[in-house]
Image (cartoon, rainbow, N blue to C red; front, side, top):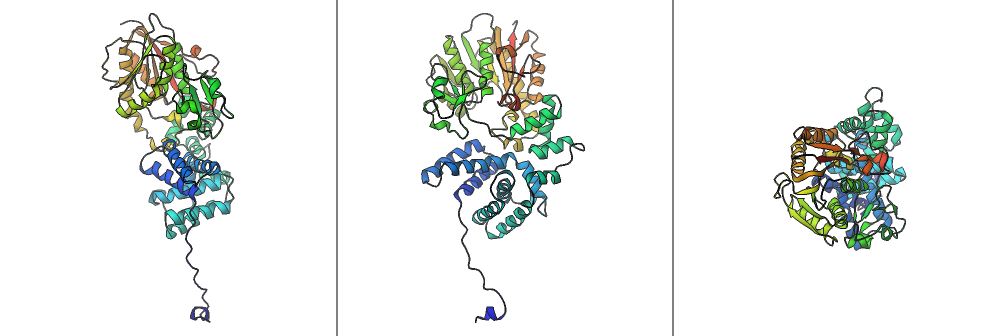
Length: 473
């Protein structure tokens, strides 16, 4: 009998190497890239998945699980942080970010998936041993065992303030949005609990990939041959892929004849292209063209009428993306790198002008869930001067009788109607065009004359569009 056994001590367990789980390690790597490099998951995840498939580590089910873990953790981060905060003995800001990422992954598996609790905890603790070390893995284990003691509804009842006491904070915790974003979206909707709840819930649903068949280069009939593809709801050029569909597997996308483009963006381009003009219709401008989705659709629509598009983008690398998107367009076009607030073209040069201005991106939270945690209210003040300057340039660039489209991928009133109202005070010889009739069949477009699309009403990003005609020089 050994000395240790005579003293009544159990023999020490031999050290066991942690099991490496490629799916969860990849999900962790993606979350770290989002946090450390301010990357976007929709840009980080595809190359990671592609590399894993090339190494033979992944099959389709593994890729689907990794995608769900990354996007689910990011979308519900606010809710999970509230739950985790109730299970630790220190402020979350004192917990190392990599540890929080592992805890978020564990919380999502416990509260947002059908993975059994014991499997979710053990798999996440194994991940922690690999990426954090044994010491911090013990902390992760302790916290997740507390999280596992209740389901999501039970935790929300504990950590969210009652709606009657603090409606905005209640919705922020339940639907995992920053409080200021809840408040801004609520104002844009015009009040009412049902609408804001539906919108916030829609922001947390993973959207299907929508393609655009670029006129003269591809047809919806061609795209609909893809397995389980179906027509878009509103745009005649839109086709939605099956859930989990890979656009890179579609030959028309690989060849540039079709592209990935939300239906809301397609509708903005279509409304501008269909707006009534007085006089010629030969020269079109996209004044903020990067990365090129709207420019490619506009260029194709212009080509059908014998018109030419000038696509201008300030950042040279983004101008390169625009050029790639337009390559092969059936009609004339030009791509330039230029500052839209100091344009190289003469005033009054164009018949139609689109400015899809830089903004907070609060309209695309379904696709970029991490954006809700990065944006701050002060970002509105930072974008405001540029948005107004770009709209002024657009109005200067269009001829009398021509039309300007001011668009944002944000429903925030400070980025939509406030910008248009402020700028038009300086341009009395203009008029707003009722844009709603230009999108026939699309319901719930608001009181006009501008248009606001919504994820919960239209299944699109929350795109905004105001159409403005210049009536005199």
